[in-house]
Figure 1 (cartoon, rainbow, N blue to C red):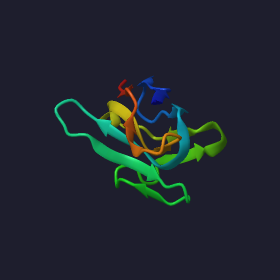
Figure 2: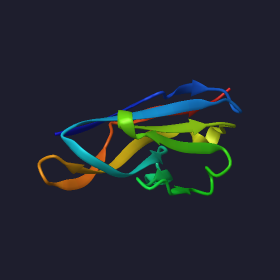
Figure 3: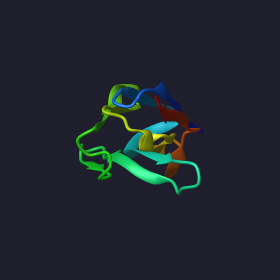
Length: 120
C-alpha cells in the first residue's frame, strides 16, 4: 500500500509565501513523475507543476516565476515553494505521484489535499 501525505497549507496574506510538502510511504520501489495539482471551489482540478525522476519540470503559466517544485529522493518527499501568493491561488492543493511498487504494480496515487487560502 502507498500513501501520500501533504502538509504545509494554511492562511497567508497576498504577497506571502508557503512551502508545501508531500511525503510518500509504503511499498515503494521507484517514484517516477510527481506533481502538484490544485482545485478551487467550483473549478476543475488543474496542474500546478510536475517534476520527473530525471529532473524535468513543467509549470502552469500561473505558477511560472512564482512557484518552485523540488523533490528529495532520499526522503521520498516532494515540495512546492510558493512565493508572491495571490488570492487566485486559493485552492486545495493535491500531490500526485506515479509509483512503481515492490509488488510489481505501477499506478498514480493522490494525497488527501491541503488547503491554501490567500487573503488579507
